[in-house]
Length: 340
Image (tube, rainbow, N blue to C red; front, side):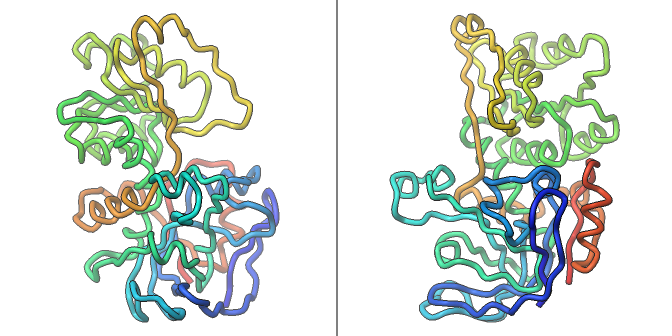
């Protein structure tokens, strides 16, 4: 088979590899549709030990396809099933895995291999986080479950309720998914960003109001939209220290800030702890997903609750993928469908 292997920053190669055979509890999934991802582009540019572990490594982590082989003892899937493959699951051993926080497991090893004709799915993912996909749902739509599940995790952690006001800082693809996850909870959603095109897309996704940071008085506009108090929730989806500070500045007294965008190791933010203390602001970091979040993502996608046309706008074959990453490494582009 053909598969893309990651060797280091800006160094990926399409190689001939043996088709895997499943061991006990494992399944092999034939590629139907994988998706390119901003995190994969970040890994391509600078490396990503959390995502990829040690190198060389299989590459790609958003995948849907068809089960082509099953290992001994597998009862949750059979050959021919259309499935969505998650990139993690509980290992059933440590404190975090047994307390619904497998994403915080000290031994967490994220699964990669979506950019290949066949993917060998580990037994713990088969047991806990391999999900069937209805025939009526396109495989590329199912493959969105991985990134979408992270936004469902974030919205759940923040305890968003119907009628709450929620501001998303950042207007990229993850912001669009946050909009959908927030709307599923009945929230009023605003989005703040710089790109006019991206803000229009967030409005099309269902955001009630969009705000450009290039406009004078944008902070006052946010407060006016949120009943002159500030939003109940602010989701930082950029991953920069200045937008972390902006989130704390904009949230209402007694409100909640979600640090959704990841920063580089060692990043520090000079927070106004006086405001955090006396205005009783809660700040919560959120990372990754768990099987219930992933299952909910598959459900909402299958029910057509996500405007996927705003997120997926291109296609590329495995053969062209190394050149595609090289050409687009420093751009911000929508997801593309990767096919054999």
